[in-house]
Amino acid sequence: MKNKPLLLFVALTIVLLFAGCASQGTPLTGVDLDAVLAFTESKTDNLLAGLKAGDYAIFSADFDADMLKAMTKSQFEALKTDRDAKLGSYVSRTVNTVIQQGDFYIVVYDAVFEKDSAVVMRVVFRMAEPHQVSGLWFNK
Image (cartoon, rainbow, N blue to C red; front, side, top):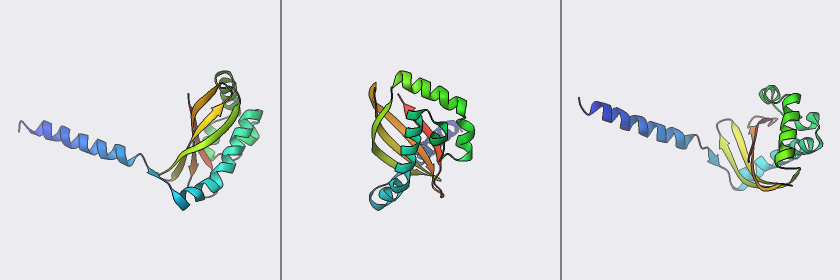
C-alpha cells in the first residue's frame, strides 16, 4: 500500500511523456513535404503580402472561420502596428520544417524582417481542402 502513490506517480509521468511526444506531430519529408508546400507557399505569400501592405482582405483571404473570428480587422491592424514597430517589414523566409499534427499541417519558417533576421514564424493549415489558414505565430 505504501508504494501505491509512487506507482501512480510513475504511471502518470509515463502517460504524460508519451502524450507530449505524440503531440509533437510527424515531420514531413520528400514527396509529402513537396505536396504540402505546393499549396501552403502561395497562401503564405498572400498572407505576408497583405500584412506588408496593411490590407486585411489579402491577409485574411485564406483564413478558416475560426481564424477569421480570432483575427478581426482591428486585431490585424494592432498586429501590423506591433510587427512594424518591433520587426519592420517582411523581407524573406525559408522553410525550416513541416509537421503533420492531427488534422493540421504546421509550416515553420525562418523569417527575415527589416529589423530582425531571426524570426520564427509558424503558419497552421487545415489538412482538408481548401487547406485554409488556421493559425499564425511570430516568435520574437
